[in-house]
Length: 222
Image (cartoon, rainbow, N blue to C red):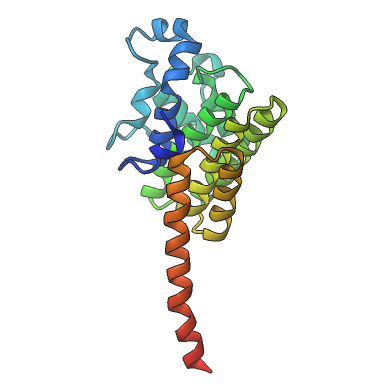
């Protein structure tokens, strides 16, 4: 499944990232799938169930790493870390249930997907400052994904990281300029990515139209 195309689906960005990784996750860790006792993927899928309230009241003592076994626990413990101002700690918690190879491009993309699920939940509850913290950490994870992909000569992986960053800039930061730059970089790395191309052209049209509308207003003020 094309990662960039997934963004256009009517679901959250985080679910789209997970969907783009699902096939690779299942192949890379069949033992994890078996251990979860469910065919088709690990229990982390419950994290993306629409309308569920998985972040319960914060316990005074966070769970130990070896106590965290489900997606619900991961989200809850990551929320604890964000409330404590520890964004890297939140990433570490979320990655405990990753099923891709540690420190690989896919692993960082998977962690980003979990972070963006947390960002979506925080945003829905009006926690703006915490949402910004998670978004910043997500972009750091994508920088790591791009770096790993570049060292492996994986231009498609680099493009996927750039495309994901573009969507975060656009959706969560409202920064069209940064988003367009990231889309352009992604297309330079992987010109065949039709989804990224369509997203870039859509945003470019929107941005140019907004600039055109703003120009007469500036002229009238003179």
